[in-house]
Length: 288
Image (spheres, rainbow, N blue to C red):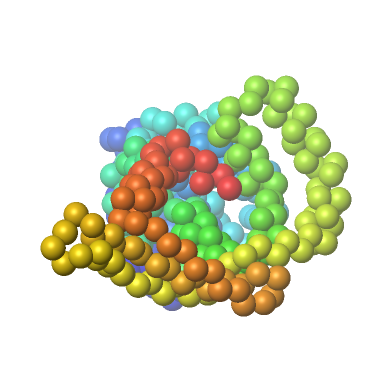
């Protein structure tokens, strides 16, 4: 069950610096006001370039608002998390804790099955404010795959909405890093993105694409027999009545096929679905 506002932070041992240095998270934040944020992994593009450095950059502002400590929890071994913190200057600012077996992450219900991308169960991106051991504020990043499926379903049902596809700067950085551009190309792309962002958004807001989208599908199976004595002449047919919306008007299309072609289409669709489960496609989906 996902932790909620008002719930107490569970007692769980996390690693700080090395596997031998155990820290009970509940004891660490007792009688304190703390910000806890979780990330899928150390050195992952968005976390390394934006999330952790953002807390470091705003450290003075955050502490100035009465926060006693900032804690970062990552599902990695303690050595990796410690090295990550040192590489971005988190020392004396952000407490870097490792949750190597995702025990704390699972205890608060914020685990993420990132096996296709990162090889194991990780943590969703989240942030929370905790006062005296109880959660007073919680923000959880939406699941990327779930969000993509919701967008796809919305497109099928209602047509294309251009406003859905606006990337923010973090998503854009994640995309170009994951695709693998060199440093010069990354800098050029990011500069071009920032310079044209407003223009692109204005253009997208003016785009009104009216794509056909699904309403309903009916089907019928017919068998034509030339002669009862000649079974070879049986000709089965599948007839589909597809109802769609096109240019805001209902349109009906009749489609006919035979079992061989239908089986071929099904096999192609199943192959495409299987391809979408590969690591390469899932990584692309993650950055859409």
